[in-house]
Length: 296
Image (cartoon, rainbow, N blue to C red; front, top):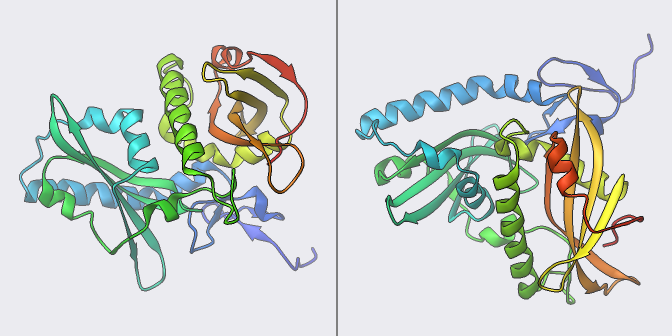
């Protein structure tokens, strides 16, 4: 056997791979790679157990063990707000450089009053990549326990995505950004309402983000239609395989007009998501079938 100059391995099962692009990464600072989602969950499982034990102890300390707010943790609309538009993000880094982030959002419910969602997670490319813990509480003392490390001052700068309609600074205009966010919320609400309960869980969607680029660059199908606002929308669909299971990845995009840097229009992704459900697949095959890849 010849020694390889470059080889890589899964940090959990130690499987050897030749190409780092075949590994999954969930931390920005520490380059730990994994060969599958299963290995990610096994590797970080003890840390999940540790944080869950910490939460139990803290709830006993602050006498809030009986809070009945679990429905908010399982509601995708609240989780979407927590991870996409948090009110606070805290970064805690230990002496080895390992980072854990705290995402916190405040909610005001008509029936339930003010409550908070807080999560401890890993972040990769400025997005939550692995969630250790999510909790809901009205107890401020418990919430304060999640404010560890250093609070990030500019959340928009941290969470923003590159690309889009731009001026000389290359940033998406506020008007276009608001339009995209509005459409994203509408599409997500529709998706969550119609999808099968047996389909890929919403809380696992982040594990499939790596398939967006490949779907845009080499889609199996692309459909276009004009929505009620008069905007041209495109739906990119591609079949993939992950951990031995086949699924479709969908990317809904919007045409935002002529590109400054090159000929043609700029098309921006609004929402990407996976599905194993045939009914969901058929429901997004609408409009005019066209050919061609994403131009941005």
